[in-house]
Every structure is written in C-alpha cells, then in structure tokens.
Amino acid sequence: MVAEADEEVSEATMSEVSRLSREAVSPLIRMEHALHPWSAYVVLPVFALANAGVAVTVDGMGEALTGPVGLGILLGLVIGAPIGGILFPLTVARLTGTRLPGSLDWAAIAAMAPLKGIGFTVAIFIALLAFEDEALQQQATLAILVASLLAGLLGIGSLFLRHRFVDRPSA
Image (cartoon, rainbow, N blue to C red):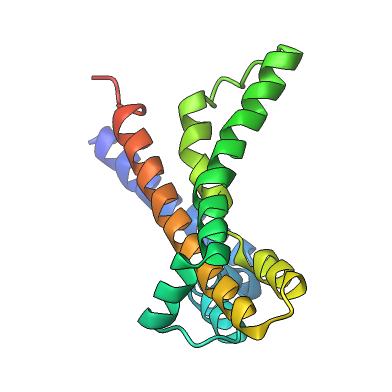
C-alpha cells in the first residue's frame, strides 16, 4: 500500500515538474525550437536554390557534370574535400602527438569527411567571381548543387555505416 502511494506521489510530482519546466521556457523559445528544423532543412535550401539563378534541368545537369569545369567541381567537392577532411586532422595529430578525445575516433572523422563537400553558398559565390562567361557560371552553379547533394548523401550514408558497424551496442 505504501509503495502504491509513493508511486502515485512520484507520478504526480513528475507531472508537476514537467509542467513547471515547460512554463520556465518562454513561448518564443519553444516556437523557435519547433520551427528550427523547418527553417534549416526546408526553407533555407529552397531559398538558396531559388537564389542560385539557374534553371535546374536534367540536360543542364548533364552538360554541367560532363564539362571540364563541372567535372572539376564535382571531383573537388565529392572526392577532394573528404580526402582533405581526413588527411588534415591525421597530419595534425601525427605531427603534434595529439590524441583524440575519448568520445571521438577516426571512424567518426572519416564518416563526417564527405559532409565537407556541402556548402554551396560560398562555392557559388566564388564560381560567379571566377567565370565571366554566363554559360560557365551556370554550369558551375549546377555542378556545385549536384556535388553538394551527392556529398550530403554520401555523408549520410557513411554516418549510417559507421553507426551500424562501429557503434554496436554491447550485449
């Protein structure tokens, strides 16, 4: 009987604590937290794509990825950025004798490395400064968008694989 009373008191107390903690956070902060995923993962990418200033078509993407400018961008963002993302920390660790913190391992760094290829805002800005020809600017912009998408997909895949094979829960 005493155990049941303690359980009822603890449930009531937990409910009250939960209610008070919700009230301690302002409605504006709660709304900001609720809207953040929508703004970060839907609104911002759509806004960036709309402001890229190019028509996204299958033919345009094919041209952009087979030309020397597009191919260079694709290889740089999808292959070069991850290689640099692995080699730079590895070199720094070897030269300085630094050790990774306990919760970080080289598999995690390698899994995150493909995500370095994302970041099309600055890349598009640089492409617009680098090329005077509008056709090359559009090819570069399309290549950057495709390469960023591909880098993101590779990053998600590598993180999934790392989680699946490295972060196995001990039984």
